[in-house]
Length: 324
Image (cartoon, rainbow, N blue to C red; front, top):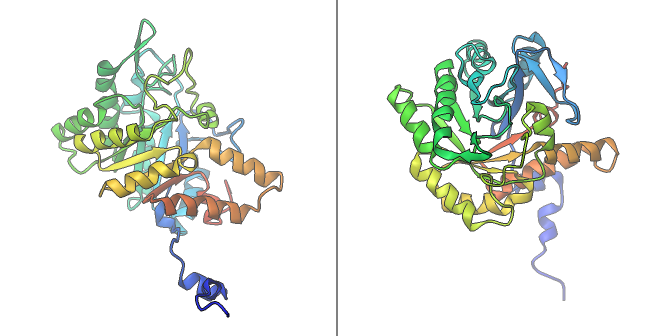
């Protein structure tokens, strides 16, 4: 007796496999994270193929133009400080690196969606995401400074502001400040489920934002928590978040899936620096085939439910030579 239901029929040829594909990653699904500052363009130690870019480097704009020609529609901008203080005041200067870069981006590529990371860690001497008093992270005092950064980014032309600090109530506070200043159409993409992960090392090197003391476990989520992620997302949604984010992505696909099923607003996922670097090292060691592992990584994140995938793999996925 031969089987009547043969699932291999679905796989008989490349054409059939493409025709019946349930999940497809498109260039428009991706958001490319970049690091900018007023210093010289330089490679980032321990972060393969990534750079801190000078905001006026013509090579960066040539590189971005190639990505946009291949279908990329959005970038996520991270600023790197050249000066730091106790409250992170460089973060909200009108002539700060992020603000100047956003203005140039919107002038050069007006159709491209520009998102900006909103946090204090890179701008403060202690590297923490909130105001510190007597060794304690003070939640409510931090909100004022986060709103200053978000407002300055919106004023520069950012389409999306993305608070990554994990302070309670920051989405509502930022939304109110944006609306008071008539930035009604600036979206908030909240880092809603941001875990206290071991996968952020290369990023902290890039942004020079490692904490000078302790860690971030009093404000980032414990890796064991899933119900708490749902509650964090719900509160951000109630406070006015337009997009909710899960970070990291690959180790938290279950969280992406849960939030996608529970909420009708878009869900983004950050394929973070540690995930990226592990895979890059595997590629360079010839453990992985580059094209296949990158495609599988991004497909897994989208299949879990992410509407936006923030990933450093954009150049490889779009087959654009890095830093040409």
